[in-house]
Each structure stands twice: as C-alpha cells, then as structure tokens.
Length: 177
Image (cartoon, rainbow, N blue to C red; front, side, top):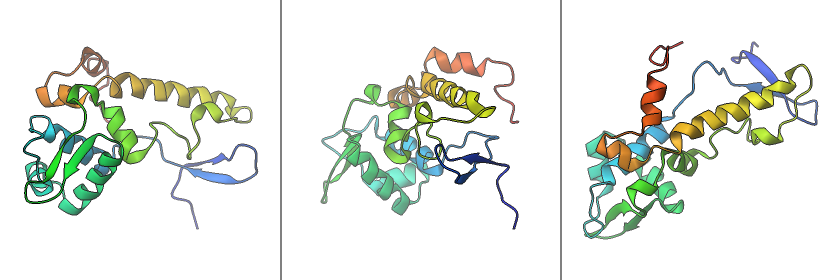
C-alpha cells in the first residue's frame, strides 16, 4: 500500500517514522473559519441581549451542531460567555479588540505551529535535516506576525492592520501554488 503522504519525518529520539503532511498549502480548517466568523458576528452584540446559536448559524451559514461545539470550546478558552434559557445566548467575554485570530485558533485547534504535537523549538533533527527546525520556527513567527495582530474587532470593522496589506502587496501573495 502506498502512503498518501509525500514524505516521512523521524520521531526525535527514536526510530519511529511519522507520516508528514503534504505541506503545499497552509490549511485553515472549517472549525477555525467558523469560530472566527462566529466571533466577528458577536462583535456588535450586546451582552444584555445575548445572541442565540441559531442566529449565529443562520447569519454565517454555519451548521448549528458544529457551531455549538465550537462555541463550547470558545467558552472554555474564555473568549465567549453564555447564558441558558429563553433570554440566553452568547456574547464576547472580552473586548473584541483583545481577541486575536491567533487566540481563536489556539482555542479550537491548539498551538499555531506544532510539528506532530511537538513545539518546533524542541525538535532535534539529524543531519542533513537539522536546519528544518529553524524553518518551522520561522514559519511560526511569520504566522504570529499576522495572526496575533489581527483582532476580531479589526475584521468586524473592515480595518485590518497594515501588516496584512503589507503581506498582500508581496509578489505572489494572491497566487495559489
């Protein structure tokens, strides 16, 4: 049976082999996309009149059951708060200007750039792949440069930080490769 993966990576400190992901594209999961969209939808909401999950679902075309699971994770991460009952619903637990896209990703998916569940700074590759750890660290830093500086408030206001425009202005930014 052939592997669906293009390459393998060695588990540091053992002879075990991990299948490595096909890293052609950075993948944003539906879960992350839905979580950010739900929070953006909550920005203008009033905590005294919480927004129901079915309203969020309808407004952003998110499957309600999936959304409820996401909202539960966002609540554990203290990004949203909720109240049950006829007057219940969800609202932002912190000001939208204090909730970065990176916070949302970490709440629903975990760290930004682990490699097989291991933080890149803890990786120890054998030569000639020993420089790969630095590639993963630099990639994480690049993700942070954008995702930690864009907030839910920025997205809701349509006023993204300059770092986004700077990256979009780079040659090839709009090309899929």
